[in-house]
Length: 368
Ligand SMILES: [Zn+2]
Ligand SMILES: [Zn+2]
Image 1: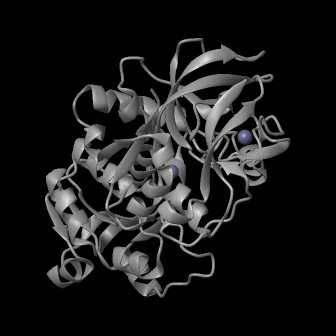
Image 2: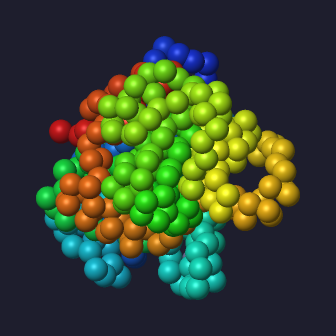
């Protein structure tokens, strides 16, 4: 079938991208779902920093590709072998398929699906190959999703069904911002009710984590960022305090759980310095692979502290998303506060500029 998609054709084009326009809007051919795959009509898709970093070239990917990994849609067609999903069902996507059968997916513990990791790296679906084509050229799938399009064919292991009554713009954020930020707090950080939390880096993931902490009984939740407008947003969202890194350090306060969502060495060092004895520093940032930091191992030992890396929530996404849906339905997780605007697909280049300059939190593309 023919769909409309946003195709990234150039990596590292000079900003502003609203002028250099590395993303083209084109008619694209989409294959029918194969075994274990479904056809989804996309209703909403969030614009995430991971999309931006592929446009800017900070993260490696091949072009042409269709970006977009944080999304919500309605199943229109099932491929053979799909169980537990039905036509008309509302679903959200996760950015790493979980096959459930490889050595990485098998309990105990948590690790990334090795088959899913390879498929993502190759720009393919879990079942192999590409379903997107334009002018005789295959297009890469991003993270097995490619949701910046009117429709997507997606492996069933990248999809999680949610109640149809959850608003689609809110639901889109479940699969990346909420899953990543919330998992850093609850799974990696092992937050206990009454503990204090600091979040360093107040983008979509950081603030989603802060909202999960607030809804999970944290005693105080403090946001830390260098950008004044983000500190204002954090206060509007109900965080107890919002501080610059200098203010946070000078205050002398320490926190049981500190999450670094920035992706830079200095930010992680700040997060470590703000962590209380017995506390957990969690990092979800993705700095340049060559980044190194300085730590004092003795402090870790005598203060019984830990530093933990967290990816995609450090758990089984299906279980976590069910929990966040419940928190939302109970009024404990106001995800809608993270949405700074609704845009159309053809505004995506400009949206990258707005995200790059910190002018927005989560922009959600809506499809009529
Ligand atoms: Zn994302
Ligand atoms: Zn697996």
